[in-house]
Length: 253
Image (cartoon, rainbow, N blue to C red; front, side, top):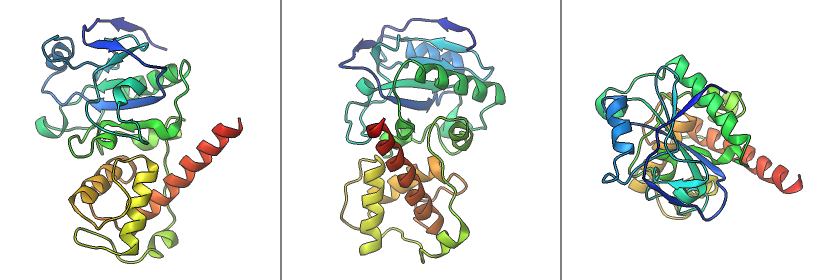
């Protein structure tokens, strides 16, 4: 593990128990310096445990044993205080507002090392390695579709599934805003079961569209449009199978 430099932020409080989630963000500001200054500003009341710069350098702002204020309002797998349950990693990138760009190799390598290091200390299931947009799809887009989620999973951190073409075509026509019926009910139930705050039942409303976009940013990043086409739905089914298998394995181990 590469060296980590401490730059303490005052923005934290006590945890209620050990963390079991890893939440990845992008800084979403024009410069790394501006983002770090805000994360250490007591008046801003935001922070993260780590910041990973584009050159691969890592800052530790808050000890892992403390509750950093990085996630805000949101939910994942029924957890509504995601700050209390998670370790937050800010990855320097200007984001969608200021010129979203690919994450450099040095930065990605550092995130991979950091994820492995964190998971060496805490029990964090792959299904609980998520983006800020997963727990708060109505507010956030980060770290977004340019983040290499597939590589993270291939390296052993997170879930990834690529469905076969025949599985995609078997699901029929896309589902989108205004649709209702059994297909939408199954879609909403699947997204909820994976971890999103979207409740089962109902039609393909705006909340469904936003949640589908969040799922696509993480698990089907080639097209983020909020339409649940066959590829999106087949991917959801596959990711759910992986998450279920992981959960069963965890219970039996």
